Each structure stands twice: as structure tokens, then as C-alpha cells.
Image (cartoon, rainbow, N blue to C red; front, side, top):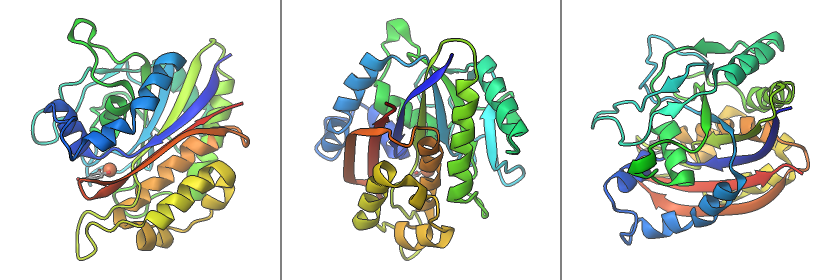
Length: 283
Ligand code: DHB
Ligand code: FE
């Protein structure tokens, strides 16, 4: 049977992707940030997942104000990197896993989650930056990401986003779906976005290290309590874009209650956000 072996959470700041694509990772501004992912790159090279269910949000690249799915699962064979204004990132096309994606869609929809099924979609920095952080840049001679990826897009851009509790419960439903898929696959679930950041207005650049640290602690020790945080608390404490953190709860909900924290990293600044990262392994 398929099984979820681990969860990863990481911010998905677009400037990180630009730093990689422009060869700036060793510059003084960026070096400490990339150093924080060295452990993770070694860890995932050993883990070798077959599939990553990658929870992220689209930033008006594939969707727009014309069409706003709350939860959307990518069931296609492949997903090309989106052009976000400077041409598509020079990263591989993402290869999907249509069989598992359709199975998750079926299982979660029959469990009463109104999942939108997406058969054609381009993926933006929300999805490609975490892949770059965890896998580095694939060699030109073998230009593929090392595993299949199922994009799971969550609306955190246009009010109202789903509640943290809804995200937590969706994670639990995803775990049930994966564990009822017959092929023997090693699956990971990633949550992206966060941590505290506000990109516009008088509070732009807001960083709340105490809130972020408590959130990281809660992911390990008491995630059910995090699921009760209301939207207004995220916005007040973590900034308007800090609401992206609800996506981390989908990741956590898909793991066992006694999942173990094996790595954590926190860094300020990247662009005008706090970068947070945690790895949890299922027992
Ligand atoms: C920025 C954009 C994001 O989507 C994000 O999650 C963090 C930062 C930015 O434009 O700086
Ligand atoms: Fe974002």
C-alpha cells in the first residue's frame, strides 16, 4: 500500500527562486538561508520519495479573480512552470501522478471535501521554489525533478480562505486516501508559504518571531490547538500573507499524531518575509 512517510513545511518566497536561477546563493545576503536547507537536501536524497503531495497556493498565475477554487488538485500528467512576469523559471516541468491524484480526489470528495479537479495547470513559485530548496537544481544531463508531484492548490489569496480547522481535516482525509491506494508508494506531503509576512500597506515587512516560533512548536507538540487559530489572529500576528500558514496544517493533518520533528530552520529576512522550515517523520 502507499504510505505517507514524512511531512515538510517551507516558505516559498519567489526571490529565493530568483537567487537560485541567477546564481546568487553564495552571496552574503542569501548564503545563510541556503545553508539552512543543506540538511534537508541530504535527508531527502536518502529518503527518495516516489511522490510528493505539494500543498501550495497559486498567486494569480493559473487562477485569477475570475475563478477561485478553495481546494484544487492537479490530476494531469505534467505541469509546466508559469511565467510570472520574467519568463518561466528555468526548472524542469513537474511530472504528476494522475492515478494517485484521481484516487485522492475521489476519496476526499466522497469524504465531503469539495475538491476542484484540474487537468491543465501551470505552477508558480508557490510550488517550484520549495522543489528548488529541497532538491537543488537538477543537472542539465538529467533535467527532471527526482519524484512525481501532485499539486494541491489552496486559496489563501482572496477572502475567504478556508479555516485552519478545515485544512487540518483535509490533511486527515488525504492521509486516509493515500493509505487506501494499493500500489506500494513512498509518499510525502509538503505544506508551503508563511511564515510571518505582509507584502503591502503600512505594516509591510511585519515579522513576528514569537508567533512563528510558537507555530513551529505547536506543529510538533499540539497541532490540534493550531487548527483552532482564527483567521484574524493570523492576519494580526503574522501579517496578511501569514494566512498562508493554514496550508502547513494540511501537511500536519496528514501525519500521525506522534510524528517526530527531525529538523527545523528559521531565518529573517528573505525579501520581506520570515522563512520557516520544518521536517516531521511519521513513526
Ligand atoms: C513574496 C511572495 C510570496 O508569495 C510569498 O509567499 C512570500 C514573499 C514576495 O513577493 O516577497
Ligand atoms: Fe506566497
